[in-house]
Structure formats: structure tokens, C-alpha cells
Length: 142
Image (tube, rainbow, N blue to C red; front, side):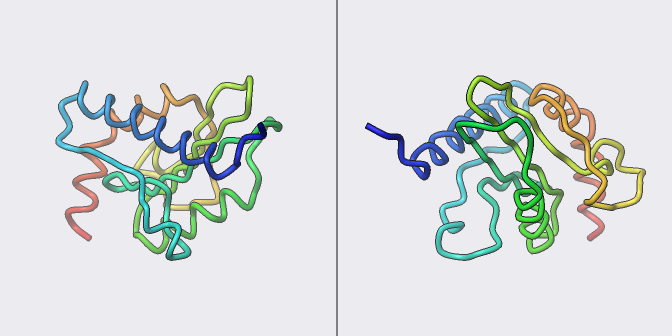
């Protein structure tokens, strides 16, 4: 029986939500995330919203690199939501990768979503942990 691509996507989003909620719990962040069910009714919304970030998840059978339209999609969601774009993507038998703009790595750098870094999920979570208070401070002034 073939796997429905939408079912596969929903399953992957749930997995990412679980990883993020475990991260928040382990690091004593007062945050719980869930899938954004409104994404199916309204265009331009991300799959998962966490404070300061719009997260888009992609899981495909074949491939090895992100597609430019995925990055455009998450940047559009982030622009609509006033947040940092995060693209989490995975292909079968290939580790999960995360794309974020360079200013999310170093918040002192110019905001330019077209300059991005690709990293492992663990590396992104380490950046989140390190920069969370900075993101929070920056957003308090908006």
C-alpha cells in the first residue's frame, strides 16, 4: 500500500513537535508547541510555530538537498508572522537537516533571510538554547 504524502508530512511534523517539546522541557523553557492546523485553510502559514520562529517541515522519499521553493515558502510564512524562518527537511536514509538564516546563528548580523546556514537538528537546538534570551529580548522591543 503506497504511503500518502500528506500523511507522511503530518507524521513528520508530529515527530518534529515531539523533538521540540522534549528540548523545551529539558531546558526548562516555558514553551509547548504543536502543529499549526490553520496552515491547511490559510496560505502563507508555517507548519509549526514556536516563539520567534516559523518552522516548515519537509520529508521526502528521495533527494539530498533543499528545494529553493521550500525556502521561499518558509520565508513567506516568517515574513507574515514577523519571525525567523526555519526549514527542517529530511529524505529517507539521510539525516535531518535544518536551514536557518545566518542572523539566527549570530543575532548581531544583518537580517537577510537569503543568507542561510544548513546544519543538523542538534546544532540548531544548540543555537536555540544559546540565543533564546537574545531572541526574546529582540522581540520585546518590537
